[in-house]
Image (cartoon, rainbow, N blue to C red; front, side, top):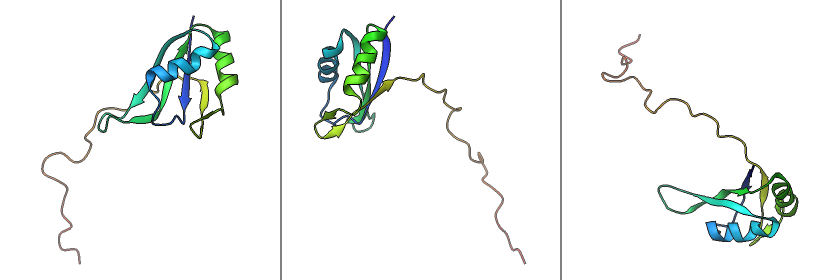
Length: 105
């Protein structure tokens, strides 16, 4: 079974394909994804790589964690499962607003 890696502190010029090319030095990359900002379309500076085996993933961590990519020291470690998000937006007081301060003497 493959192993998913978190890759942080990437240069903003990094793409899915350059990430895949870089990590393929350590074995078979089954997927690579740079996380993009939804509003700006610009890289958030981190992504995920899935290696085809545990041994290849460990090799990639050893080789690339702390390695320089365009002047930035990459962070590479085993990806953790995404934490569940809290309920939807909103909150607040709903319609009608809160009680005004009034004349407090």
